[in-house]
Length: 218
Image (cartoon, rainbow, N blue to C red; front, side, top):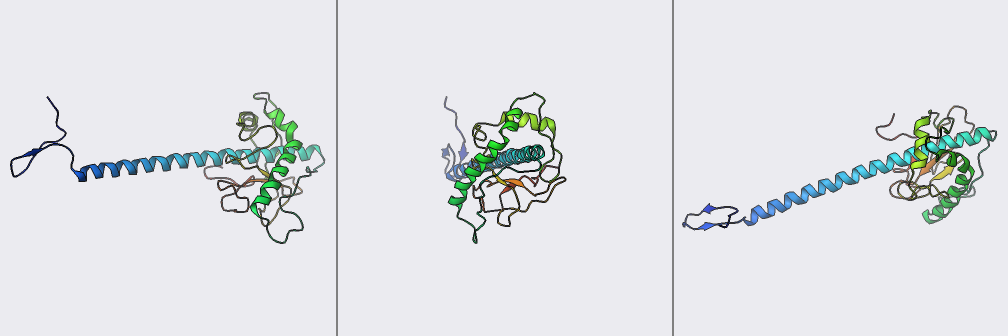
């Protein structure tokens, strides 16, 4: 016996089974809307996760740099400037990307001893000091974070944000990049920053900075 999806009685006495065209179109439209909402929700969750990972990485780098400065009489490592001192106009993004890679490799080289210690999970060795905004860094958070970074973020040579761009170290403020406030015990307002989701360093609207917080963080 064949089951009927629907069974309607029409004035002429005939019966017709199946969906009408309007019902089918309505069902398809509802499915498309539901799928769109699911994709949008998934993208939002992914973006928030990427922001949290990158912001946490920037904070840990600021703590390690404080440790480095304390051990070197408040001297910061020499790194390639992403904005050359003689620049009158902001450089093009491709030029900044090349300089960013050099800058990144140089500060990673300087911080590598501290990074290597933090890779030892549960070893009890943590970065001391404050973040670039003067906020204390949790030892538990620091010791468990670096060792869990994926290779796409930290491969032992470069440190990238969650979107694949090299993180940049700024030894001092710059109006084209960011203006970090001085934290307690800091002689210079150094900071780290990420190009953000659009992977463009000079679009400050979505850049992430070690001296800033993100939504939901204290």
